[in-house]
Image 1 (cartoon, helix red, strand yellow):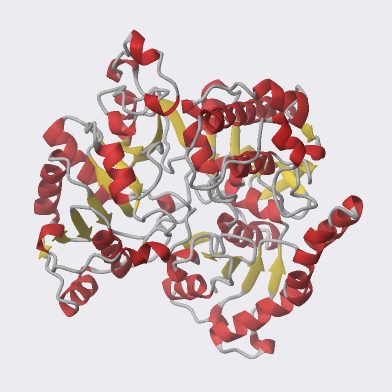
Image 2 (cartoon, helix red, strand yellow; image 1 turned 180 degrees about the vertical axis):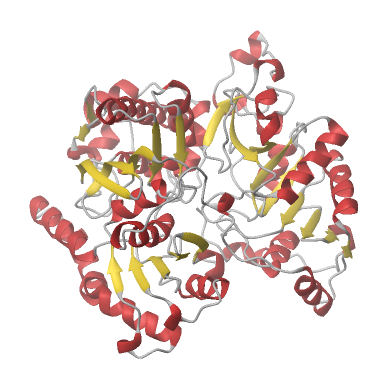
Length: 613
């Protein structure tokens, strides 16, 4: 009999569910995609229903349900933290305790209640409920799906129960904990503190800070290392908590932090100044230094040639790229859902391999390209379009790819919806907005007219895996858009002396390569290598564009507007298409032109629907 395991992450941020059958990953999805509430922390009832449907299961067919966290240990950490900071932590304590005493402290009962409602089962018939530790779930999500038989596993995030950074040795079907750095000393929370100080939203805007960094200079690096962070040669560190408020207050930074960096935090949505650019550059430089030092230490201690990464810090693709190029490892594998959502998958895999002691076959990436979410058949899409009177044409793949290549070549922006939805924060060619990377205007058009977001934010290239080395200083697979690499020198456009003297946002509009729409101001790009084996239709589209233009890559950004979760259904995709200045929409084999759509009154009120990230 097959063993079905449901993993759950919930109640903190990025709730998700995953289904593993006999060690095979069948389905995984985040609750936000169904609820349309970004970073939704609620019980992932919709995601769980999807996973059960994908596996052809009722809840009564599930053998184990596992949660990615141990709430009693986390509660112990909160109490100890409040006591150690008393009386300064009183306000934070009074804010957090009612939620804990009402719900989180009795999480087992809450989970059973929610699961019972999901399957309409009496309590005595529910599957056994298990719990992993937070970083154990991260480590399992990183190592068990990786192609490595033996590897170091480095987890770096804000905080789990106590751990903020942990090292594990993955070997076969086992994970052996080695050491950890504990709260309040946290690289993830340090980065989030600067995210907050720069006026962006914590647990959401960290990637903005990373994108802003190349516009600045690391002027504050020494100040950070001299005051905020005592960094040892081995990469371990301690933070001076006088500058931070997250352990005992309701903000990330303190008045001492304000004084050190010359004023209060930037107000959200106000103009980004050179100070924020330089702060971003400085904390990014510090983060990369910590990651590189930790990497060298880990390799020396464990004597392994490969490393797996998970936790929110593993989404810092600039640091990942440097670790691959400059670090001591021959190969790196990063869990595409590296944040808390991936904990649901890691928890399920931990039950199979560690709790049940089942063997593991290494040698291949078992994430299936991270295409683990729902898909929609052409017939169902057509029924929706016809039912709502939406004009479209249905084309076979040969005709569709040829027409799309022509449209992209003419600088049209296209919503691309096909196959299974991606698991994790990146659109990887299942729910993407695509464009011509050779276009000088494409970055500003996509940012300001499609995504409605800050002009400085870079876009990523989706490149044919077999052609990546022709365009970038990178030769290995990067299927999950988690590596930044330099654009190949042969593709760059040299800057004039006047251009080299530009500062800050003035750097933005200087074309730097043959593909300016995906080339960041430091000549870098965040790579997605597209593989025929995992996404044959997206690969075929890029190949058709390459055949027409000679350029084997496309701009690939997530199919959503700012503050909105990535689209999940054809209905979500059509709404987003009609609310933006996208030119065409592809729903599997159905092609929709904006010019042919029925006139609808312009209504900006929908922009209030999503909270800005």
